[in-house]
Amino acid sequence: MSTFLNKAKTLKLKELTPYVKDYASQNLAPSVVQSRTTTFLNEYKKKHIDTGSVKPLFDTMVGLFFLSYAIAWPQEYKHYKAEQAAKLEGKKAH
Image 1: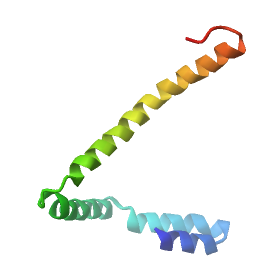
Image 2: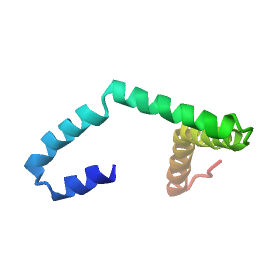
Image 3: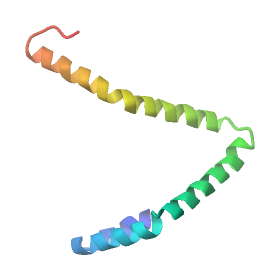
């Protein structure tokens, strides 16, 4: 990723779109992403799951925490905005 950004910094704006398209077609093709994902999962399994590490448990807990936060955030933001509007109108916020 750093080579992509370093190269992108040196390009002019007109040259950037073809460069991004070329990079994406080479590095973000479904077959490339699938092989990288499979390699990552196999290495993760060998390194953490097969050794009996607790890291997969922690990774799952952290992932679920962020997922639940991302799902609940719009509702919390809606309540926050309603509370702000009520305070501006001089009403009691719940």
